[in-house]
Length: 118
Image 1 (cartoon, helix red, strand yellow):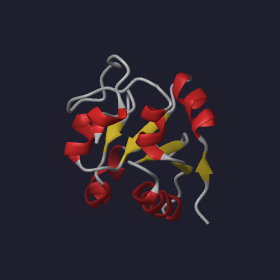
Image 2 (cartoon, helix red, strand yellow):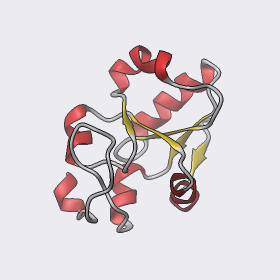
Image 3 (cartoon, rainbow, N blue to C red):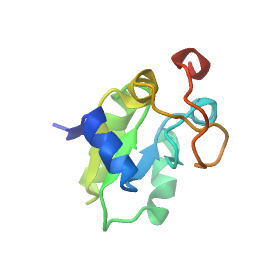
Image 4 (cartoon, rainbow, N blue to C red):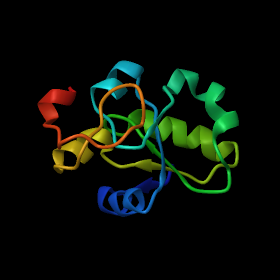
């Protein structure tokens, strides 16, 4: 079983500077992502491992939880302390939390409505 972190715990970890890895495709990421999340689409994940530190937890997020569970399983098999974020980016935004847009992790923009990110 892949370890999951709930949205409340994730929000606290995010506020404390957690490492967040977004495994959705680039278009989804550009449309709206958790501020500070690194983009690493699931098919490209093996190419990003060299830049991923093993000395801290990795919070893996996708749209709703399916792809992040797959990525978390892979990362854990490779020795990372990875956790899938339950509910994904959709739940983050549905809770009224801010989202960033564009290609870079960047700073948060104004809170985004769920319709703007789907």
